Length: 65
Picture (cartoon, helix red, strand yellow):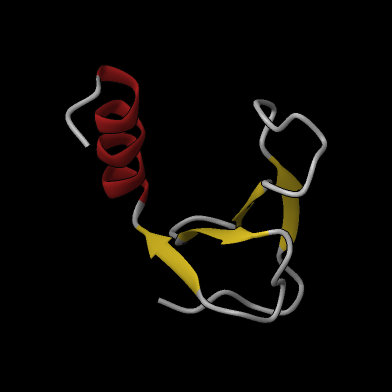
C-alpha cells in the first residue's frame, strides 16, 4: 500500500502534546490508513486497510494486543 505525499497527517486525539505522538493519515477510498511516529516523519510507517485498522484499534482498546 502506498501513502502519497499529499496525504494529510493528524496527531492522535489521545496525544498529550509531548514527544510521544502518533500521527494517522488517510486518503481517498479505497485507501490505506497509515500511522507513524511524529518524531520521525520521514521514518518508517505502518499501513493498514480500513478493516485491518479497525481490527488493530479494537485489539489495542480491548488489551489483546
